[in-house]
Length: 92
Image (cartoon, rainbow, N blue to C red; front, side, top):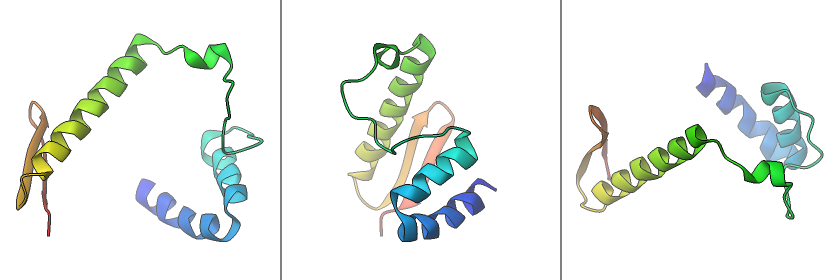
């Protein structure tokens, strides 16, 4: 279902650009944005992250790093990014 929604979003974004991104944010995120870009200076309340968010970012960074390190070896990729979580693929 997520893939279908994402696939259906590419066409409007190609045609309408940023306006389509604003429409999609309203549709999926239920927010009314003035711009798809937030420029500095940023509000102080947006500069504070909870420990849960920091942990999630750290874990994502670690997983990405492990994936690309394994990818650099070439051939068939098998990387265990977390205990019991494997990423498999071919680099061809």
